Length: 403
Ligand SMILES: Cc1ncc(COP(=O)(O)O)c(C=O)c1O
Image 1 (cartoon, helix red, strand yellow):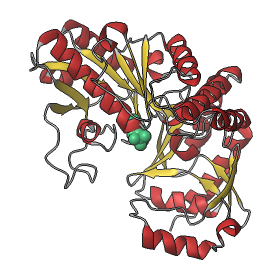
Image 2: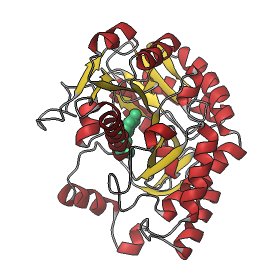
Image 3: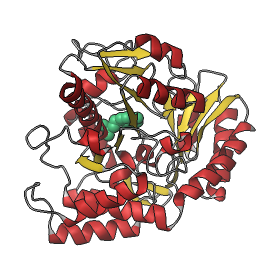
């Protein structure tokens, strides 16, 4: 849809946004009329280098041709039928995900927070089925982010933040322990603990990678205490860190993982993958969703995933991401650069991340800011060394221009 199609000016779109939307976002000062590969284009045709990828979504590039073609074909064939008939896009994508990860079964959802709800529900049901109804306690990490619906929001270990404030009472049965500290988690395990739930790299918490000792230590803690290991791969999964899923770097074997963002190639698609003995706890009637396995979303996700595999974009993310991080380390005011592949956090030694983000927008580079001092970049995985050189130069100018 373009401005001329609805007879509006950009100023009117801005005014209507303020008037008609419940606005929970700080917006970029432009509207997007076109998106292609590494670039977004505004109402005046200006091109912006995309280093936020719709927040880790458009991994095979904005409006990837194969994904677009799959969506067009599927919308012309079957758009939605609910889960009563068998469905080709749903099953071919599920098979590909199982073959890629080694986990056994998939349940599709529409958004990340719903996938985490499903993961939490499945863990609790498994606890009840195998040990009784008291075994529902889940430990998550401080500074984690798992979503905005009640279960996922409660799992989010940021009790003092706007994510929690004013929404109480939250869901019982969650406690938080310090990330990268196995002892802190071990201290919270009781006979009623059924699972530990973690991001391999905390995305919204500031791009904090788990150490190998931590994740393997947590896996051992889980095995020793008959608890499930739940991994939230919503931001880290789908080749972003170079691996099909980020947990693979650590050599651990989670019982359930949640996925979203890139999974739908730009359409709302999320899901969980579970081991067989755990998946068994969801039976007909125990869980469901109208849009689960939506044919268009699954066709898009399948095409996106095939692109990531066929073009070896995980390899590009790993190699070019490393190159990019090295370049960023040479910039002024840089305290730390961390992440893996194309999940990159640049921590400044001054609390001016938002100002850097705005300066970068003025210079036609798109990033996101986390808190006061972290600039996060999660570009499409097609980003080249030249794209990274350009982004690093714009960031240099944006930092040097700080007041
Ligand atoms: C690690 C993680 N989990 C869950 C979510 C929530 O996903 P959604 O916004 O699709 O509900 C996010 C979103 O940023 C995320 O980064």
